[in-house]
Length: 117
Image 1: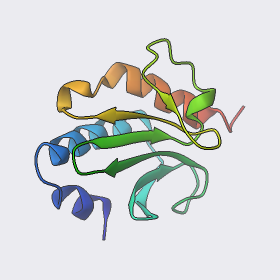
Image 2: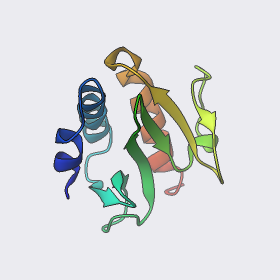
Image 3: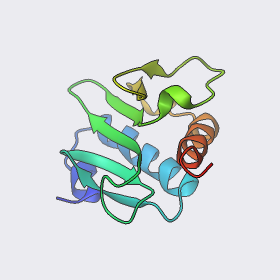
Image 4: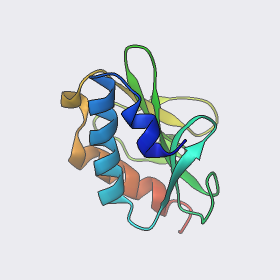
């Protein structure tokens, strides 16, 4: 299964959220590797799925999780990121209106650059 297959198999509105997220991620992280890893789409800075992972998109029954592997290290003035295991943080999205392209782009670029610094 590919990222495209995963998103296409979702019912609306989850599919719409996932497609919008994918567009934001692809614009914010050119050159990253998008692939299925552990059953959901991930974007990694390394050349293989899961090598230097930056973010993930995971559909649930009534929402989509947008997660950042180093999300707790990202500056989040919005307060929208919820801390998770290890250094991860995520946001729960229930509609396309929850996708803030400018905010998410800032998070993504920070998360990608954390391991470069």
